[in-house]
Length: 346
Figure 1 (tube, rainbow, N blue to C red):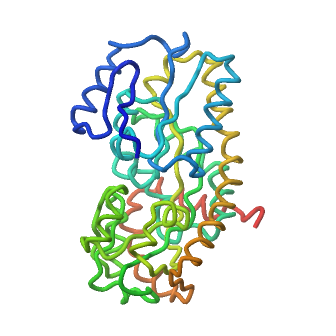
Figure 2: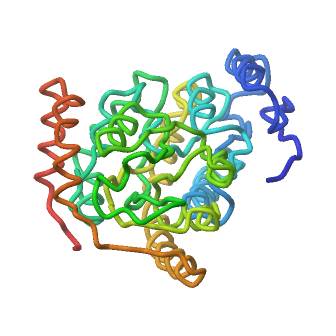
């Protein structure tokens, strides 16, 4: 990762800076001590934890170029990939304070903040990629994005995160019992912790950037993620058993700081929404291609892969979580709306 300090609206931060100091700097920016209104040409900042070239980063860069074109250069966005501005949890807080303008985060870190975002992270909710895309492009997706606004974020679009599966340093996973005794890294999400524990594993929340070392040193025995992340993170070098459980299709969210949003003109707000919406098709094309190349790359590297999964056993183990994490009628109705969405394009 590039260790060069980055400039945040005129304030210098190093990637190694203590998190609290970083957030305090963001608060200073949010208070209006630096810079000028985005509508008058203040550069905007977008952040993504994935490396440059990853589909979400490429889509974010497309969004930035499109937004600059649509606004005749008024809104110019610099994209910082590779976690340069902190973890997803860090940048989520920064966006709430107005310290960064656009973030790409998985819905899992949002679970503790926005109750509705638990829904698309439920295990075995989506029947297929086509089902997920249809639901998120429709009314259920609109409702989920709107739910972010009271929490300082403007939901703009959903990006794909693929189907998450288990990979370990020890053995292939065919049945939930195979997870017994294994420490499995999860995102910082109560739902993900509960899911792995329901399946028999020892859930270990850990920042994404720490997973490789954790696998190598035996701090954890495995993790769960999609094909592109497994490949681009090089986790396959140390966790050489990949089991296609496809237990979660939790999407990514492109969101804007509400603090910044409210300082845009109505026209520019519409430009932001339009550019974000148009970036989704770009992301999906890149994602589908990247999934294929990532899978081929790790297979060529000799990783053992299995699709011989006892999926009914996995579904049965996590079924009680649905009742636990859907305590209100509104959340259950959202699930029903998603389930009733068609598989257009399947």
